[in-house]
Length: 478
View 1 (cartoon, rainbow, N blue to C red):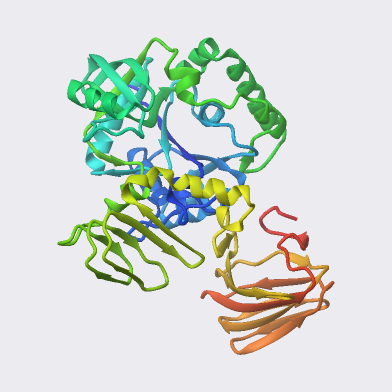
View 2 (cartoon, one colour):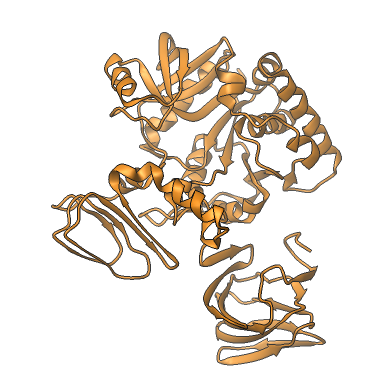
């Protein structure tokens, strides 16, 4: 008997605005570091790799996040050759992304492969219970059911969609009677009391051929457009990673997989999952990852709390002190501080909306910006100058580039830098420096085995990040 091939598809996107200031557009929720030191994405990669050890692992993400995802995959210990990527040129919700992924799986594994669709920002444990749920979902999907995973609700949550389960279809699986939008508190209490309502986790298992055939019936425009997009992407003769064809993918309807497929199809089943699940959808949910002290406070980082109760504090680089408060959420980062009442955790996204309306950089960027070669942190800036700390990973290099409006002074504080400066190639060690005038081609590289740390002082009449002309680049940005 031929063994069923299971191919994990990890969807990595979303702004995570309710987790600002840790989650921002340039580095959203899947890349947030948890108290255990790992990110949500790294946890997801390990979980996916373990449940399907013999197949590829496909990530669908925005092209801006490709190198971040590659780093997380490496940190998770996933072999380089197992990782494959489809990159979205524009955001188009879950249905177009999953449809594109199904065409990739069909091409590589055929119509009978089971695609296991996972979100990048869920925390699940224990893994044994997750593996059991996947086995149940795969068995049902192989019988041409569209399968989702439902979570046993522990309390009346108004921030999740619900699934009403019906008759049993197999071990641990049930027919879906209906999907319900995020309910009122009164309705959520009714669902909890009824006993057959589950939280909609947004994870799925599909036999590829059945998914694509059913999509033609429930969303014919999307099905045709996704097939055309895949053909255009294949015809572009790209090497990996594959960037989905911008014109055809951008023309696809912006619609979720629930609306496009799951709520319209006939054979829809749900696994009643026995694992603990947390989508870390707010700071209130994130706080549950830390054990409370005797006063109900959940704390990470350096704090000084006096007469404080039932408060979550996430301290980054600075000491956070609080006196005589209760029921607060306090999150400190190098460039922003959030203070909110626990009952208003869902409204943190309104802060991001406000920052976006005034075009504030903190709505999208952190003080530290990550690049394929490492990262840079803006330490200070003022009229005519900016000071950065550059951290270059071993074996990585910045692009060969030029600036029209600014000069740069580079001081090496750790490691050894290989520097192209105009016509010269220099080897600059710790406690040494070089000066790069405006208009000079230049490049910074780390050929060593340790981190290279450089302090960069920029001077000029314009210091924007867009003042850059790239001539050569290892990351496709030239």
